[in-house]
Amino acid sequence: MIKVFIVDDHKMVIEGIQLLLKGKDHIKVVGTALSGDEAISSIPSFDVDVLLLDINMPGKNGIETCKELLKIKPDLKVIAITMHKESSLIKLMLSHGAKGYILKNAGQAEIIEAIEAVNNNKLYLDDTVNEIVVNSVVHKNGNKSNSPFPTLSRREKEVLQCILDEFTTQEIADKLHISFGTVETHRRNMLIKTGARNTAGLVRIALEYELNQ
Image 1 (cartoon, rainbow, N blue to C red):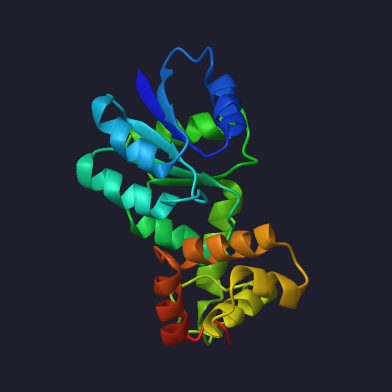
Image 2: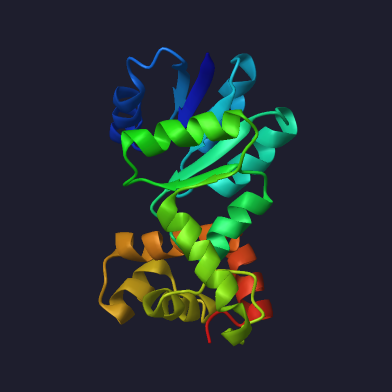
């Protein structure tokens, strides 16, 4: 029996995965959490083999959660399950101990295959993710950037520049003609991409690696 724990800040996603795994005699969902902090506090009390972990979560993101949980449970097999497809983010997650990386549009067969693979100490990347990683290696020589981080989108760079210029969130929203919530989403995505814990960390990394260029 493979014991699975699911962490995602959307209850609908958790229930969807539970439904996909329902009826599989060799897989059992033993627990769920809606945040990284909740997972870190609750997982030690569970007997867990495989963790399905979202990356983009408010508070502690998936990268931080993965690192902290593996300090507590080194034998835990972590599978990132996300919509983020940047090659650098995939590599960053794997470098911090994840054994699998699948996209949220994966079907039942892929999720089950991933769980079985990592439980047998194998690395699992779904077909789309594997192609992204392979292409990044093939084109590595043509990439002049020395940054270890994923490339920021045009809008993310605009928001980042405003942050560097010490604009408030509302001032950024007004300047770029976007909503307050959209600014916060871009900020959160940049924290995930860089692995920064907060805005101060994001600013330090941005200046060091010229991410706003």
